[in-house]
Image (cartoon, rainbow, N blue to C red; front, side, top):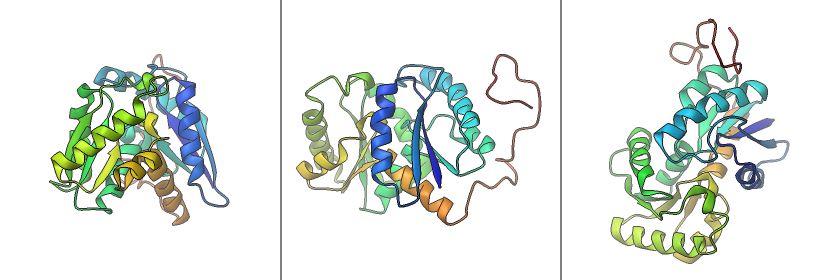
Length: 238
């Protein structure tokens, strides 16, 4: 089995961290590879960034055939479009993390990066889980590209997770950025509750779907897009 984890931003250092998280949960016989988008923003921290990341994401899927795919950005950019063009199942990390967290407690809190991204996390929670399961979304106000550079990151995430648990009455923490993929074990140990990293959760979920012989239905909405000429984008041809 081959699982491709696509980092929709163009920062290779983040891809390396993502790949380690995904490979750590891969089962025997599962080959996991992470790829960096070749076009788009260095980090995804706005609706504008998300929109510009989608062509690179789709091009990466087109160029890297696999049994299944993980979209390694917590905004799950381009998820529906990716399901139209990929042969195997496609799972976003917010989608996987929230579903996993809903199985581990009565409610969860999201700890994410910038305050401006909180609305997107709330939108996705409303889509993925029942009302009231996501109890809160909290931002540590650390830019994505500073997660590997700021020595205070772990302490700040731990402090925010503790505050979120107390404020929200939640039982589980979801880390709201692929750049936090190296933090769940240490944060969980220090706050005493399950902490879900979406990269790992999505990798295991894709692996399970492939093992079950399941993929995205091509009946209806997620059928391949109608063939046509695409100007200025060579990721797909029709």
